[in-house]
Image 1 (tube, rainbow, N blue to C red):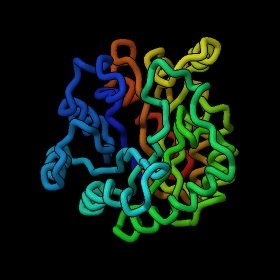
Image 2 (cartoon, rainbow, N blue to C red):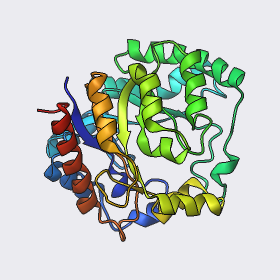
Image 3 (cartoon, rainbow, N blue to C red):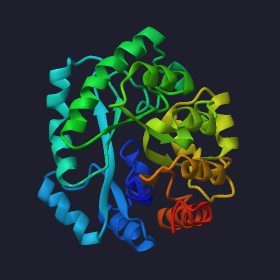
Image 4 (tube, one colour):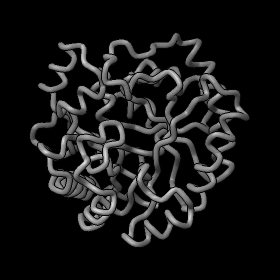
Length: 299
């Protein structure tokens, strides 16, 4: 396929903190993303829900569907119940040629609760994660059989958050389950993004890139803040922002070395009053194009 650059519209349309982005529309976000040059967008909640309506909507702006969030509940559902719960999204994404579903367990997460600090996120034992991983493998095998791989999203505030959790999930699952690799969440979790990529790059099918403002993260940690406190406080930014701390040249070079040929998606939720979405999304795009071309990942 070759690497393509996509974006999540969360900078314009934040579903978790809608008050931050109340002045922006999805249509405006789509126009901006296409104008910047992004080839795809991940599905947002404010896009058309029906498949043909969504297809027409994407075609209007000349972009592809490059994934989208799926709130999983496999910890509390049996396999057949979970299949039924996500079947409509699987069918839609298959029909629209999406590369994957971005799946994360949400039955026990605290990521959307601004009153609960990330220090109180669910931390399962190795045996618990391994058992979950075996069950998730069956779901992933089924979804892939329908034409859409599951890319599991490790996420702050969730039961799969840090490098240890990812190790257990990957060790306990079959190759049917792929991994979404997110630089910002890994750094926030105290993991080494390059070490995780070196270990599990062969399972990575989808990439999210966000940078981190270390002083903000340090303040959130010191104050025992929540994930949404971090978002509102400006912990995240785009690649190319001089305030960020992640070495994206090293990340892109690693992706090139491992032969990655999927989507690289900018997903950096910020307060648009402080970080104008078009300006920052273009900064991220331009920086990634430069790095990808320098590495040979893009022509």
